[in-house]
Length: 260
Image (cartoon, rainbow, N blue to C red):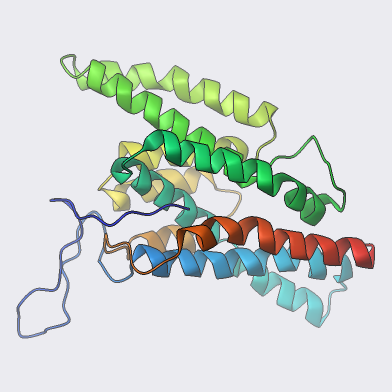
């Protein structure tokens, strides 16, 4: 996922010069502790745990120690998605080239599809399920359309623009369900709320959580987004994009070799 280096006037406050040198002011956008790179690597680890659980542990659940470990992995695995989609929305506001950003998501969506099918279904092609890169591309396209509409309607009352966004979100939700993309309409709604409440993450979280209510432990991931300090951090763009298909390819090969 793409993250850019920036600061905004409403972003997270830096450490204050007080008697407590480590104190930070908590705002509606959280408390700045972790960079985009640090959050992203936490999400990568969470995703790897989740996918390993589904590929290698689920087939052997027996109510014993494996089930207990799997339960822990289920909790840890819910951290990843909220962070990734949060970073996607942040990236939208600060990328220099939105077309390139969207194109990269679509390209790696195509690259990731066979590894995704191998990992999730144990086959090379599964037309009834599509990977998260396509989901993120849909979210990016949706908020882009809504943002352009906002600029064109800036002279009108904001409520008019807000009402106009509702059918757009509904249409994209329907498309996501028909294309069977990962997280389908849940992701679309979460991306919308993160856009609407941009720079007010603490307000966005309850709405995002309701949109993902079937995954209660996702709250851990949404909570971690409040620690974002607005800095990109040291990261490798190619690694960011390749991690998703490569780790699924490895897990998919293991699954198919073991006949799971």
